[in-house]
Amino acid sequence: MIIGIPKETAAQERRIVLTPAGVLALHNRGHQVIVEDGAGSASGFSNREFRQAGADIAFSHEEILRRAELLVGVHPPAEAESACLQAHTIMLSFLNLGLTHRRALHAMREKGIVALSYEMLQAENGRKPVLMAMSQIAGGLLPQIAGRLLQSHQGGRGISLSGIAGIPPATVVIIGAGVVGFSAARAFSGLGASVIIMDRDMERLEKIDAYFDKRVITATVSPYNLDRFTRIADVLVGAVYVPAMKTPHIVSEEQVKAMRPASVIIDVSIDQGGCIATSRPTTLADPTFVKHGVIHYGVPNIPSSVARTASHALNNAVAPIVLEIAEKGIEAALVQESRLRNGVYMYRGSCVNPAIAEQLELEFIPLDTLLK
Image 1 (tube, rainbow, N blue to C red):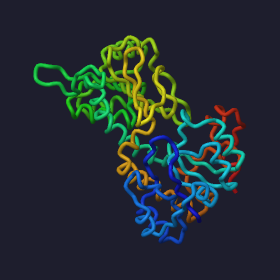
Image 2 (spheres, rainbow, N blue to C red; image 1 turned 120 degrees about the horizontal axis):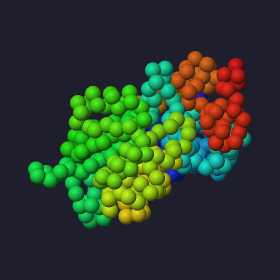
Image 3 (cartoon, one colour; image 1 turned 90 degrees about the vertical axis):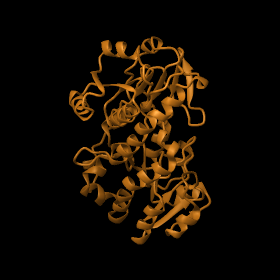
């Protein structure tokens, strides 16, 4: 199979999904891998390393799109890029519902693309390996981001996360007790911050309460608790994720207005639309804006700021999936592997995910009825 790895065109996207290690594994199994010139340079992987691993280097973005039978990227192609794809190309990428334009998804449908989303790839045990890896990285980076934004010269409140003897630490409120929320709670509490984590799922809160031995405060998400805790937050983290759907606004604009002046909001859910009413997507080059006196950080690709680590993590999670599809073909792989079926949202011109079909106003057709 011909596997294409394009250079990412999204703003400030530095990650690459397959590293030379992943390329070598595919090459050794007899598959042809084409890497776009410079696709790995931002994450520290040179053309020479990819060549040594057996890849061919393409010096045209359009060539990658036209030749690849299986396209492996971080972001789905834009509308104009979709025109270059072969009919029935297989595509692996994040879906990023909050950022992807409907026209691009419709263009993919018209091309008969088989599209799988990393966010939705789920094993039988419920684990989502690709999403989990990126969520762990994002959660672990949040104290670095928040600590910098709280500094006086950044316009923040001029406080440290940890505090010192006689001076209390910063209060960090995290909404969402999934992988991002848990990783963030561990990182913030490890620095000495006072952490409150909120969720609607009591089982998750019980696990966090047990793991941290009550060093982290847990609370249910309710209008009363949101009013109460957002008012005292020095840092408010939005870490809500709803599979295959845009994230609902959990925090209202009125609640943002009532927050402390120069406090910080980090909406990690922004790639799915954001869970805070005043959030909007920003970039790593221009990551913040101020609204109602509160600093907002809305970068959708936080792991890209540590592109080499994130690329290794993506490779570890994605390379086995790519190899499986390349070895078996997409139909056989989907028939045999439920984790792959969970990730499919477009299949040869049909929308096979009910939530996405509803958002795009398309007919939903179950994948099982289309597989041979």
